[in-house]
Length: 496
Image 1: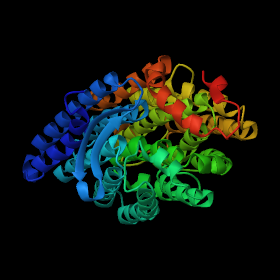
Image 2: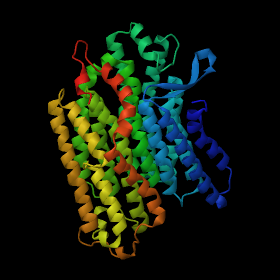
Image 3: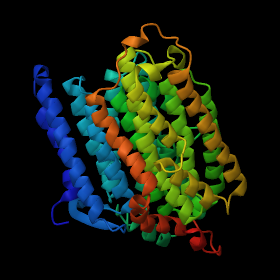
Image 4: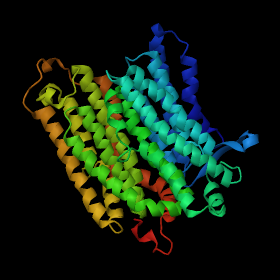
């Protein structure tokens, strides 16, 4: 990559935000067009980076930044981070498109948010990563707190307090690692330096927990999930899409990139606990989703369940399970991102989003009902659509080492089908309960412009999951090898 591709992907949105910020609100139309154009350019660059990545870690840029503390501007991607960068780049134009009537400040906040998210995925210096990790919070706080629903301030403050609490723990652990690594923040060199530092096992476990709690809040794992439903319900549509599609993946990515490689023995020690919490999250999230009357809250709780599968796969101890977990990160971003887009369309047309507010909508909005059905089937893992392969690999990979947990987790698949199909039946084929629903027009060309690309990817990854799996396998295999207990048989037999 002779072109500073990752720097362009990372900083182009923020640069555009700085240029567009002074433009007067009356000329917001120009801001919308330029914002969309910039995010499409970033998408094109991300596709180029993904195609060039062979799956192994490729450091593309490394420059000295703060010499006194040996801090470097170091960027790179492997298959895992390249896939997440591409997912982020794909969802951003859709978020701009679904926010076409929003103010200039909203769109500028989205651009700055994209820079924070991209930077966190590509940073290979711990200090640089932490800067991007914290930078993400500010625009998301404003997206929820300024442009959110009636309880937006409560939701935004809860989101920021939870995340900062985890960030403080991670910062303390990063500084300790920096000291033990002889004043070095290099992510790739850190595992070897920490292993040679002679850190007591009990201290490694504390450090792992410091990272793990911060990432678990972001996932969010049970019982650190309580900020999520409030944030989703109050966030505007684009905020919910990015929150579900990208920000939640930051937590799982943190386990893969930092917590497990830095402290493999501690990760093995806490694997049973994480498996238990993941399974609780799967069943609890599904049960809570079944109890919701607000469609947006139902989708929010479904995320708790789906991310439980991701964590179960990552800590399954097999390449197949971890591959399934990473694939589910991408699948969830597409399926749940699409669900939030669809809920946003319905709310914009009717100003309602309660399950009981609708009925018989298939006759009023046939195109919308068709799209919603495809996304619903994707979410519940229908073979042929993207959700199936990821869930199957997670369950297949985790069963040999965790049969009981896998059996309970499989219940989440059944519950997911129940609450999603019940939602579809009640909204689209149930008795008519919403007066004046006939006035809600069907989706037009504008909405289809950002819904159809998601449907295309949902089908494409259902038929050709290897588009992701072939890129992520080298990185996933390296993580799984770290989770092998000493003296344990190789997990190679679960690889394919």
